[in-house]
Amino acid sequence: MKYFTFLFISILIFGVSGQSVSKETDLIQMIQDQYQSIQSFSGHFVQTSYRNNTETVRRAEGLVSYKRPGKMRWLYEVPEEQLLVTNGETLWLFDPLLENVTIQKLEKLTDGTALSFLLGLGDLQEDFNRRLISQVFLTSPDALIVELEPKKAAANLSFIQLAVHPVTYNLQIIALMDQEGNYRTIELESMHYNLVLEDNFFEFKVTEDMEVIEAGN
Image (cartoon, rainbow, N blue to C red; front, side):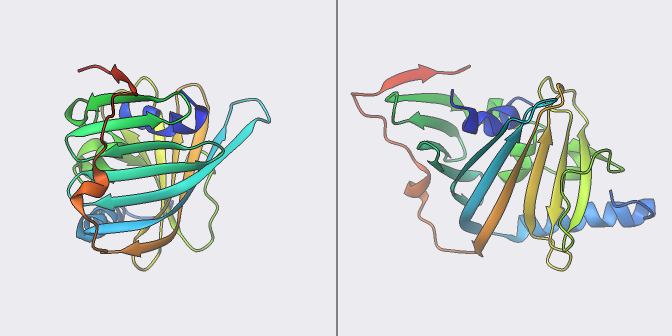
């Protein structure tokens, strides 16, 4: 599996200080409410991966699209093409270079995870506990930043940070820290909201020349 898909593999398997508890709760709810209000979006993403205690930094980018409920499409364009897409029931990960596709049922991957929130299926307050910022990864001066720890123990996820617009509460950056101190950020850029996206855009057709890998079904 190429490194630049590891962000989603990690997601699948697994504060602003000085505020009162009520204000913290309100902020998380406003982030949740805003994301739930969006019917669709498309834009550009940049993913950066950092390995603990090394200077290794890896970067990937591409196009992301979302449609409520539960449909997402991540097309990695750089450094190599890969496609991760789900129709809300099935998830496909296609590698054109290897000519294989990994298929998994989405319901086995989303319970209490960051992916559940991104798909519009989860609830931040139910799935995560907010805590003070423990490490500074996201330094955008024009964003509100929150740190969330999963309520359910996850082997490959220690915590996440979200950076959101201070007025609209739209999601701008996600950071994910694993249990070994490695972390990844994904920036959402040039987002366009509430577009008309056809359902078949979130489907994947398996052809006879592809190797099919059934993952955890």
